[in-house]
Amino acid sequence: MEKRESIHGQWSSRWVFVLAATGSAVGLGNIWKFPYITGENGGGAFVLVYLLCIAVIGVPTMMAEIMLGRRGRRSPINTMRHLAEEEGRNGAWKYLGWAGVAAGFLILSYYSVIAGWALAYFFRTAAGVFTGQTADGVGSIFSSLISDPERLITWHTIFMVMTTVVVARGVKGGLEKAVRYLMPALFILLIILVGYAMNTGAFQQGLEFLFTPNFDKITADGVLIAMGHAFFTLSLGMGAIMVYGSYLPQKASIAKTTVMIAIADTVVALLAGMAIFPIVFANGLEPGAGPGLIFQTLPIAFGQMPGGELFGSIFFMLLVFAAWSSAISLIEPMVAYQVENMGMNRIKAASWTGMTAWLLGLATVFSFNIWSEVKPLSMFETFADKTIFDLLDYLTSNIMLPLGGLLIALFAAWQMSRASSLDELAMKDGFFFKVWRVLIRYVTPVAVSIVFLNAIGLISIG
Image (cartoon, rainbow, N blue to C red; front, side, top):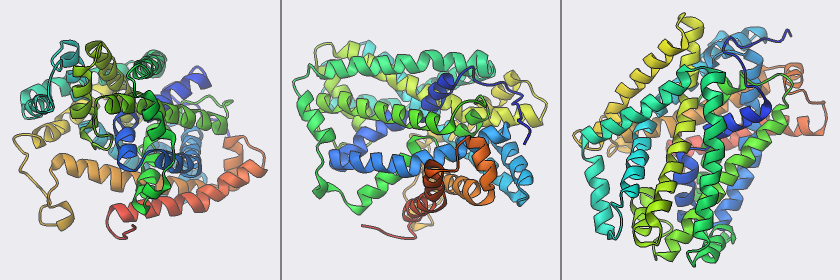
């Protein structure tokens, strides 16, 4: 096959792609979600299961998605259309591209609102708002933020503008420059926070919680959560990794690159746990505090600890950087499609996409306040208590992403020829290729299907 070139340009090196894809993968999920689901599911044993799931589900699927992206060299929609034609398959596969782009766009709309909370908390922490606050005081600050639509809209707007400006500048002038600075800064901030956690007096307790396996606390439901998070943490099934793969230099090894990204993403999640749990334990707080861990539990700790204003500010800046690098990857597939198919330049495409996602994000803003009683699908038992934000989160996380990942695995394993896969992966038809092929053909589809069916209530495990 003649080697295509992306009209959008390409990453200057494999290392930059690793930074960009890690930036896409490292988001609120690593720093916000991973610590609290680890806390809820018993610590070390959950981490072991999670690492196993990354190896047998996450890495093979990411290899497949990058492979499809680089072979197509276009936006996910056009990539899937061209690859289906090239392999003599049904043209309906282009809808897999559409589904990924749509999922990323919907996630961006509410992700920007939550990232706005992190922005607001950065400035509040730096200003000493949490200093000396009780649990009730911190809870009141959080409630007053999310109940005020004007403030939420302001932070949502700032974050969306930050994201749009980067993407408008193109692959090398925008995306590459951003990740070159954001990702090293993120790692440095995390290491500073781990250093801070080492001086809390509870670092050993935090490490034991995170790394000592207690298999009595692992349930079937915990295994499913680990499987689901391993899949979602790598940004799979939403078009981001596929479009980033389309900018990957031809000589770069997809297998080695994928392993590097998975390791970097996992290291960030573990470092976040090493930074957070000692702070939680040192202040007698609850490690399984759930989603409120970041915005309601940790501010209490930062408000009580020496240097809490500085290190709390660093923590929320870290959260903003992680969200920003992910948001850039969420908007890129739609922007790439508009440039390719609608004759727009990047500035116009990024502006239109950002503005549309911002408008949709208002529904999430209002679901925390003036529309908090609006439950659009209350006639269905499963969705009876879900606000607009809850529905968007549920639709994308539990339905669109696993379906997208499942279809990527099926196309790469069953629709692309063995010769095409070998050619694009640049692997010998030996042991490692055969292992990947078995995983992507059988193990990954079954595992993702179980997660998906359990999430939508068609099967119940544990």
